[in-house]
Structure formats: structure tokens, C-alpha cells
Length: 349
Ligand code: PEP
Ligand code: MN
Image (tube, rainbow, N blue to C red):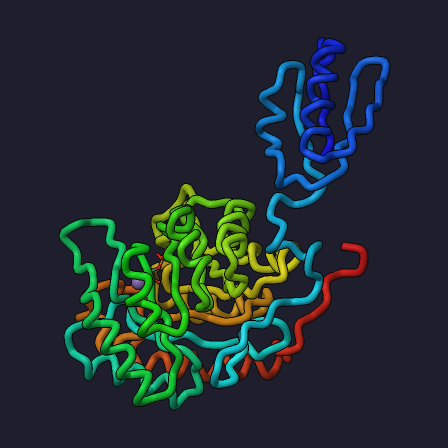
């Protein structure tokens, strides 16, 4: 990193910075210009926070040369991370994009879940999703069946062979969720719940980390870094839309450009969730296409046998019939565009 001193910085201020850098094992190289003094700090930034330096007397600002997310960055690991499951399903790299489908919440009627799971299996999806613990904006809304839902998901897995994705909201449920699920989802609202990130970092299951509604790409990757830093490198990122100024016609703004941006910055796989990204059923197909064309490693879609009666997110769920149609068109697009062979970035970019 580079530390730019204030014009007014004293000799003592400059020495103070050099001392703390040296204490933390950095090599400090001083450049004294006519107006500004700049210090080049060569070493491992994780041992000393740039914020601490920026708070020091006489420091103007600190510029990082490397990304603040280390483990998640492509600089550290140029090749794509591919997450492989026991049944051979792979997410990331040159693997064909995967599909995650299922209701927003697992509801009381097991038949309802099984119907979606069977259709998803027949179509060739790899994952069944369904919330057991639901983060709801209003405390009056249905917030999930807890362990009963996890049991339903496990049963549907037994009957179809689909891998199960479900959200964890509280570390105290981690063991229970791990007993039933193949992938743990950290929802958008919990993207910066650092204690939760730490606990899933200590488990061995792949994690789907959803982007917070008001999070920058850097905050998103730093949240992934928390999981990786605690030992779990199996992180799948999920772009699911962010807040903007206009939500008249869409629930969120699905940030398609975040997909190639993240592909450039990070080796982690990234999938797209057009259901939560738009809040509108009719936007699922075009936004899935856009996400896939932008390089997404998979699509997560909400599907319900009777969206009008769904206990949550019916408006952004496809019926099974609609899902069949959309899925077949998305698959045609994947084949036509050879999307399982990822295009290299522009030379020099
Ligand atoms: C979900 O996938 O069920 C969900 C609640 O999504 P998000 O965290 O993206 O809102
Ligand atoms: Mn939902």
C-alpha cells in the first residue's frame, strides 16, 4: 500500500508511520517530494489495517495496491474455483451452468414440494431450494416451518436425488441445517452478519452467499472473504439485486454487470437469482438469459405449483408449467451460445 502524507506532516509524523509499518513487518520506502511525502509499504497488509494508518497524525490517505479481499481474489488464484458435489455436480469454471429451483418457503403440504422437486429433476436441474427459516420484512408474515421443512427437503432429496439448498439465519441452527442440507444459503439480509459468516466459515458445506440489498461489490467479496478466512473456501456468490431509486416496477435492480466484474476480480463461482432480483415472474426469463450471457455459473429460480397460493413470494415464482417452458428456452440458449465454454476476458483488461 501507499501512504500519502499531508503537506503539513512533520518529521515526527512521518517517522511515526515508518515505525508502525516496521513494527508490523513492512518494508517502508520513503519518497520525499517538494510538496508531498509518500511512503511505500511493502508487506502483508492483513497485519495492519489501513484505517489505523489513516487515523494517524499527518496521514492524508492510504491507497491499497492489492484488493482488500485476498483469499477471494483472482490475483491470489488465477484459475476459477469449481465446487464439486458427491454426486459429480460441479459449479463454476467451465462447467455447464447449474439450475436451482424450488419454492420460496417449504410449506405444510409435502406433496407441493415433491411436485416441484420431481419436475425439476425431470428437467435436469441439480438443486432443490426451499426456505425453512425465512427472513421476513414483516413479523406477521409466514416465517418458515423450521426443522419440519428441513425434513421435507431431505425426503424430497431421497426421492429425486436433487441436492438441497436452504437458508441458515442463526448460528445456533447450523448443526441442524448441516444435517439436512447440501448447500447452506446465507441470505441477502445476513450478508454482513459477521458472526454468522464466521460460523459457516468453520463448517465444511458449500455456501451460497447472496449479495446484500445495499452492498457494493467490494463489500460482497469481503463478506465471502470472512467465510474463506475462517476456513471454508467453498463459496458460491449469488447476485440477487440491489436497492436503487426506482422500485416502481421491480423489487430490486438486478446488477448484471456485477457478474463479469466479479469474474474479473474473483475466482469464485457466481450465480444469478432473477426471482428476488426483480420480484416479477415475467422478468425471470429475460433476466436469467442476461445473467447467463454475462457469465453466470447458474440460475436460482422460485417455482411453486400454485404461485397464487404461495405463502411467500408467489408473485416472483413460476408455476411448474411456466418453469418447464422457461427452462427449455434457457437450455437452448446455453447450447446455442456454448455458455459452458466461458469466454476469456478482453486482452489486456
Ligand atoms: C431466498 O432466497 O429465499 C431469499 C430470502 O432471498 P434473499 O436473501 O436474496 O432475499
Ligand atoms: Mn423468496
